[in-house]
Amino acid sequence: MRPVTGPLEYDLDLGCRLRFGITKFTHTQEQLKNLVGADLEAYRKARQIESALEEKNRCWRLPYKDEVRFHIDAVPSIPEDDAIKASLKEAMIKTGSVKALAESVTSLAGAITDKRSLHFEWISHQWRISNSEGFALWFESRMKLAMLVLEQHALMAKAAKVDDLPARKWKSPVQEAIQILKRRRDVMFQDAPDSAPISATITTLAALSYRGEPDAASALERILTDMHLYVRQTIPRVPNPVNPAEDFADKWYDPTCARPRHKGRI
Figure 1 (tube, one colour):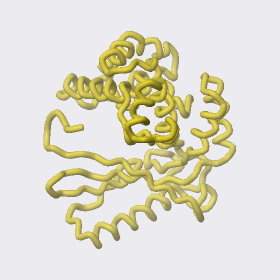
Figure 2 (figure 1 turned 90 degrees about the horizontal axis):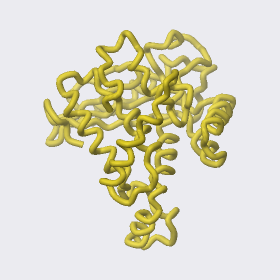
Figure 3 (figure 1 turned 45 degrees about the vertical axis):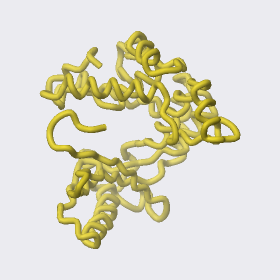
Figure 4 (figure 1 turned 90 degrees about the vertical axis):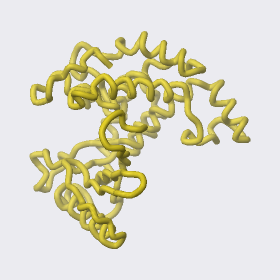
């Protein structure tokens, strides 16, 4: 989506998961991050990219400057421990997810680096959990509530059945509604971007509110009517559906965040 204000620059989030040879007991978060950073730096030099590699709290940022300005945020990670995956599955089931979906989602969980962690420089089992692939799978399950729309797309794509149609090849009404909500967020908070609700909060509340409406207008009406029902009065206020202990709305009660004006204004 094009930025509302400022220079036209897009961002691409990239997960860089090392699946073999590195565990929480052989490497620190810092060592993993430096390994990935060294590879990205070698890539930058080989491609003669002038912009310097930037280190962020969780990722490395590689800026590109060409006819389309964009940057890549690469987050280093390793597969999460089986015990943690099992606990995540139990938590998802307790919060209403069906067992098959919970198993599929949590099998994709990973452990990521974070410079703000107290254990960043030390061998430790306490890494931050991340599961962007699992979240995408969960969101796809919400998209498929629009079965009539999905079947029409499958027919046009000459797919044998709905499950054969990749989600990336079609846009559901809930996706269109979320794009509208994010654009409204960007416009409303363009003078105070630090106070804007994060995309994960908007996406989660919209997906939970969606009931399979066949078009963007009716989906948006449903979401605007019901999304407040999924904001809890106790912490976590907006739980991550694939890691219910994580709160997507932690800005609402974090005193270090700049004026959390976004509560109730999604």
